Each structure stands twice: as structure tokens, then as C-alpha cells.
Length: 87
Image 1 (cartoon, rainbow, N blue to C red):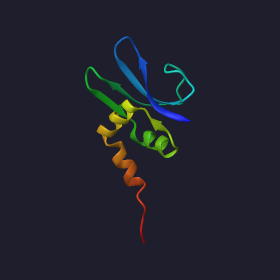
Image 2: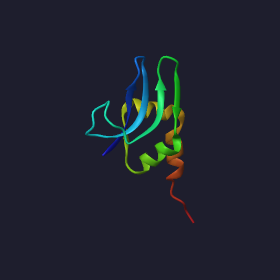
Image 3: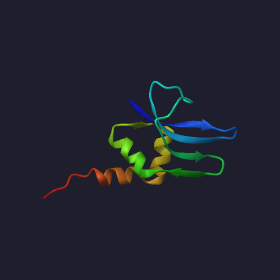
Image 4: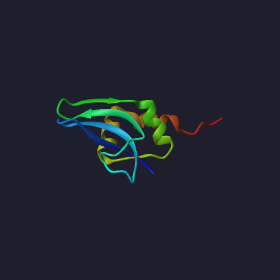
């Protein structure tokens, strides 16, 4: 199973948002880097199409990544892409 989680990088509190296998440790090898988060400067950069791709494949975001993605509006796009189409 794949999770979207934070991976620490550098001495300062800067985190990469990565898609990683559940069995890997936090600093383990990531499948893909999908963004970064800096809590001190309140900066976020997300690769939204890549995050949507992993969510469609069944990836589960951790609590913090879920909150970051929700603020960025990723789940609104995810819902819009998965609404049933009526004819």
C-alpha cells in the first residue's frame, strides 16, 4: 500500500511530501516526490496532478498531508473528477 507522507530534509524543518510504501521507514526511499512543506515560512508547493494520480490509485494521505492538501484544494479537484456523469 502506498501512503502520501512527510519526509524530513535538511537541518531546518523543511519536509518533502512523498509517495512511499507503507513498510518503508520515514526517511526511506520514496516512490515519487510530490511536493514540499515549510511550516516556518508557511510555504507549500504541491504537484497536484501527481497527487491526484496517486489518490486515484488508492494511496492514503497521512493526517498532516491530508490537512495540507485540503487547504490547497486538492480534494475538491479529486471529487470533481470522480462525480458520476448522468446522461
